[in-house]
Image 1 (cartoon, rainbow, N blue to C red):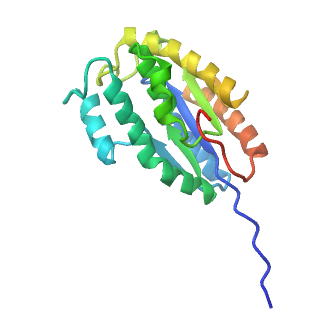
Image 2 (image 1 turned 60 degrees about the vertical axis):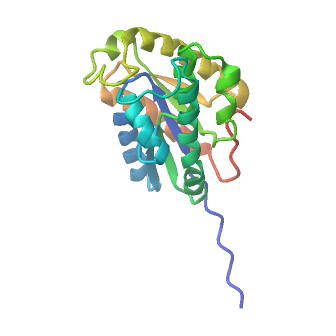
Image 3 (image 1 turned 180 degrees about the vertical axis):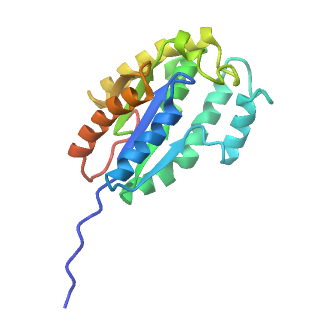
Length: 225
């Protein structure tokens, strides 16, 4: 006698947190993971750049100002950051397909915003990331550069300069508009990160609960396609 077929596993949620350096992304990622776990959802955290991979080790040294990569225009390092995401894309897609949600601290949108801030053109920057897994929702933690520089540890890494972060913030606004233009309204949400940890957590939580209530299984789209 044949056994009844099992219903397909619901696909996991792919949630990305973006923002300026020291905007509280890592803390909020951990809190969001805890929220999803409390709801009975399997979930895994991810962080880009992933400094554990072969490209990630080199990127880590670059960010710590231990090595230089390519010229000052940033073309080579942009491609290296993109390669780092592609190294992890198959693993992320496998987790999502198995029903495990992924909460990601930074993603391709950071790479685009930071490279745009260096003066590179989007026509060069976008194609390397085309085809990566598309997040179901990206939450941009918005914080003024004045607040950012007061956060602990600011200035330790290469791009943590107030003037540069101000330019990056403007580029993130453009990136968010492009995400919604290409992939539809609701894929990018801005969160005021200037409040307390609890206030930011609750603002994010409401959006995640809304997303979880309407997301089901099925094939997910690809970035910039």
